[in-house]
Each structure stands twice: as structure tokens, then as C-alpha cells.
Image 1 (tube, rainbow, N blue to C red):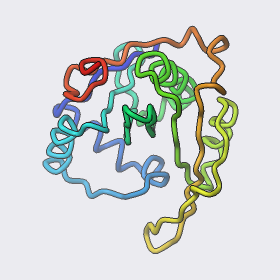
Image 2 (image 1 turned 30 degrees about the horizontal axis):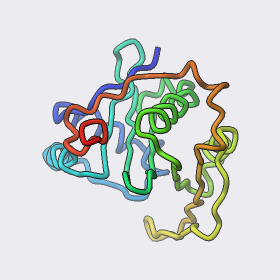
Image 3 (image 1 turned 180 degrees about the horizontal axis):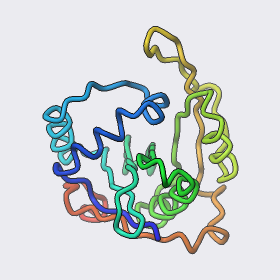
Length: 188
């Protein structure tokens, strides 16, 4: 059973270990150094960001990955997001994580749109997004430089009107936000 809990500074080493895995970092916009103190400081700084929040993904209370909400715009009712499964034994669970998140975003945060950027060569995530109702937005594609190479980020959008609420209604999870001072649930 998938559940989600807020990230704490005590998760710094776990997240850093996941984040620096080649399998994970190859599809991240940036690479980071293995610096536990820096990771802890970054995690603590996140709680004061109005447009960002993140959670640990759990299976039977065991941490397996990270999911984040970013570029949250309450006025426009939009956000971007990302996630990864850090534990190799749980990679197959990754396909179910988005449904929980989409239901939270559309039903609890009342978003109209969720944006995503995906590395052009991350074809499994692109296909997953398409199956969930995402559409391509070629005019928002962009190129980044990473490790001396240029990489195309494919822009995609999932609009509330294109999400299949009936099909995915059973994937409802609680996403706690007690540390997010800008949580829309507290500032409604």
C-alpha cells in the first residue's frame, strides 16, 4: 500500500543516497555532490518555499522514493512535479505513484493543470504520462546542458479536464503538509 509522509531533515542521507544513484541522477536536470551537510541544509530550506513541497513515498511504511510539487501557483491553479523511486526493489511501483499525486492535486489542491518536463530519452516516463492523459507542448520544450551535453526536455501538460477521475478514483492518499507554511489547505 502506497502512503506519503513529509520529508524531514533526518531524511537527508536517505534522499542523498537515492539522488546520487546513476539510475536516478541521469534523468535529473542537475547533478549534485555527495554532501550530507549540504543536503540537510537544502531540505531545511525547502520548508520556507511557497511554491515547493516534497514527500517520502512509502510502501508498508518503508521509504522507497521521493515526490515533489514545484512551481505551485495558487492563483493560476498550476504546478509542476517530479518523482523517483530510490529503492531498486520497488521500481515496479513507480507506475502507480502518479495516480495518487494527480488525485491529490486535482481534488485537494484544486489544480487545473499539472506540467512536467521529461528528458527526451526517458521514454518510459513519457509513455506513462501519455497514458495518464498528458499532452505534448512543443513550444515549451527546452534544451539544458548537463555534463557537457545538450539534452532536450520535452514539455507535457495534464489538464484536469483530461484526467480520468473515474478510472483512477481508488488511488486516493493523504499528502500531509504540516510543515508547508504556504500550504493552500491552511491559507484557503
